[in-house]
Length: 369
Image 1 (cartoon, helix red, strand yellow):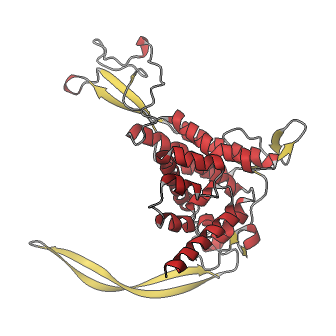
Image 2 (cartoon, rainbow, N blue to C red; image 1 turned 90 degrees about the vertical axis):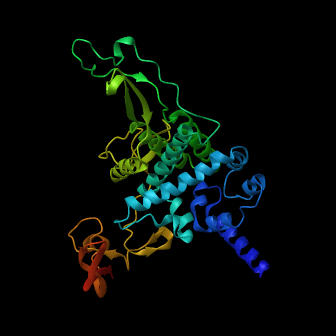
Image 3 (cartoon, rainbow, N blue to C red; image 1 turned 30 degrees about the vertical axis):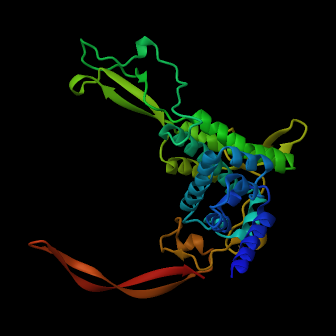
């Protein structure tokens, strides 16, 4: 029985290595999660050495920075959840990580979807490391102390004549999220693998561009959090620090960037990326770029990494995300009617009881053919 279980684990690892050698996203595959949970007793060096889908440098990073590596792993899980949330009502619903057989095939195609995931995972690592620093989860970093103190003219002091505050003055304080350390970890762990495993110059340039676009999305969404100090609730002095918002905000911004991603080609003479077609918009460092166009994702196609939309639940709104008209690709849908019992006409009775009737309700669900 023990030998059979061992064989199963080895088989899972072989699948991981064959489908995604040298790619850190494999940390998010269900097969890795299963293997990892069954090998928690391994020493850190032994555990990291077994992650053969990572580059040599990444495995060394795992060995020398175990707490940071744990947060990187957690960041990937957050990015996967965010990707599946952002595309939950689309033909492609970020099924990349739930279908290991499609994993390796889809990441090799540099489509807008893969551009989005590159940016999202890079952003997630930067975001979570920066937050972990300010929360005291890591000894390697802490609060960001790099802000310069504002000039005295910008201090937010209470005026004795107007009894009001200046419009933009404040004093730095509190504990700012350490964006610089988060950026450095994201670059050192993610970007360096591109220099090692990506042979085609255009692919490497596109991947690095999208990684950076993700990090810049994090930096653009930094918020100023302030707290007033003074006697009896007065705001004699306002102290402010930089904080990052919920990752959902960054995911939504990158989802918008995905919708306007630019297809590019490599100008070998100048060694720069340019829009593939002259009529396409110019892009900057904050935009997402891709090489190949997307599949329609309507039909199952293992070669293109598409699961198709057959059997997907949809709604009857017209031409909106999640609607049958969008998801079903003109194949139509079938409706299944079921009955459920639920509480209804609930009333409060003194004292202290809520009494409800049981009502039968018909529920219609629609599924793509």
